[in-house]
Image (cartoon, rainbow, N blue to C red):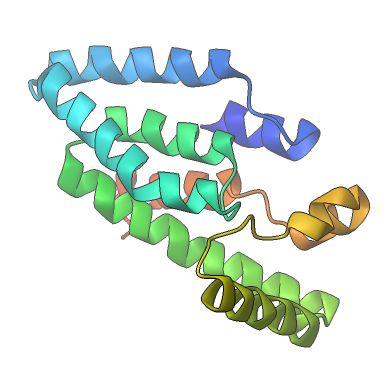
Length: 162
């Protein structure tokens, strides 16, 4: 997790090797701890099913989904769901802090409401942030590296803090 978060912060990408290595460790740990490959596969499938729609509209990157799937391999589905919710709560806190620090909450809210209105009007999902992704600097400024809230959520949950 730490390597994935550092890579995301440094390069905006998470190498697949990190994901595969982590998933292999998780699968081996599942066998040792007794919940096995089936529980790990169920957790990873749950992660994919819950997060794929967010990836399709651009709310999460492919790396974020893969990191969540890697985390899921380490846990039973119910425990993974708790980590997922905690990570999103932490991510919301990061986002709120970023909005307040950059004083662009009104602009971001306007864009979000325009996006929703367009989806309702056309009755079709579209990529969120599509026009800002073309202007890379603006896109980079408005995003958070979601691997960091995922890392915090996992550490807090595994550490028994929450």
